[in-house]
Length: 398
Ligand SMILES: Cc1cc2nc3c(=O)[nH]c(=O)nc-3n(C[C@H](O)[C@H](O)[C@H](O)COP(=O)(O)OP(=O)(O)OC[C@H]3O[C@@H](n4cnc5c(N)ncnc54)[C@H](O)[C@@H]3O)c2cc1C
Image 1 (cartoon, rainbow, N blue to C red):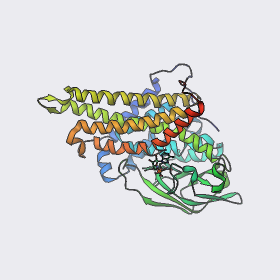
Image 2: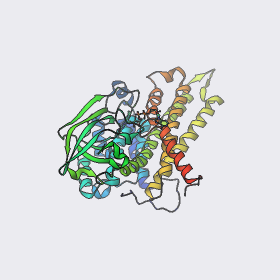
Image 3: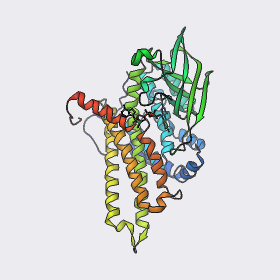
Image 4: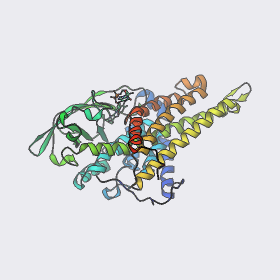
């Protein structure tokens, strides 16, 4: 497994972004303030994926944050990648999800398990503008993802794929997919294979588009594989080697979701602070009431803690240190925080929080999926619980 290690120095644990990281953060924030924030509410109502904005983001490198330098990308470290996702999601978590799904979740199997030839194919197409999708979940296999039914059958040097994948982000427009399938369910974890699949391969079909509660600026569809012939060289890490690729992928991408959820919490909190200073009741700004200040204080503390957790998980990733537990903690805590903070923001807005003219009901709807996808928060608790009870004690990490 080619664990991703980037260049941040391992000594010390700093609380300040480097000059370059801060420059990228600011560039992302300025772009998102101008091109995303003013329109996100309208796109949400129309269930619209703004492909023109994604094209502009591609031109700035923002859709390809996961492409390493040796394959023509910017070679960003993980902390910078998740900071970009955090900033975008403060303005619209649907676009944050689109980028995470394409550039990180779908691409991480290539990062962690692919050979040079496979990486050249995958990353080369991304640089030309191809968006990507990650095909794991099935109608009958969600939390129990390894119980999948999609079959891969060897035919000479090729593989034939058959099955239906459910809830696939970017399904409506992705040009390439990473797909998990089983040789034989009876083989369990040892039967799982991971493939790169071109959307234009005969037999790849895009099925039902989902109507969603939140992140409505993303495309979520079924992806169906009917006798899809995949050349042998497109099998990542080799026959039956898909399970460790999947596990390492999820450990990386859960930190990206933590960045996204922290962005939602930040967006909702800032909207609530602004509103509380503007809104007057009983002749005073509601921000002067202690009840409101206490809510804001809790919301800000939880948001700060969520950001520190994902930054620490990213720091561990960038320094080649163990990060499984941190990544799961970061995703679980940030998802729960996004939900709580956005509900509290609606409360601070009162009746105006409940209507679409104001931004906070959208933050609340967008937050809910953070507790569900990339493993539910119950699954993260299972992973952390197992980790702790196997180790026999909790030890402060690093
Ligand atoms: C908008 C959206 C986008 C998505 N994008 C993608 C994508 O791009 N690619 C992809 O592959 N998938 C994607 N998913 C799928 C997502 O990851 C799954 O929905 C998620 O993992 C949960 O699976 P499930 O929906 O089948 O729920 P289930 O697994 O059926 O879970 C139902 C409930 O039971 C609980 N539960 C299940 N097992 C246990 C247990 N052992 N102990 C305690 N509680 C348990 C769960 O926590 C949950 O509360 C997406 C889903 C949505 C809605």
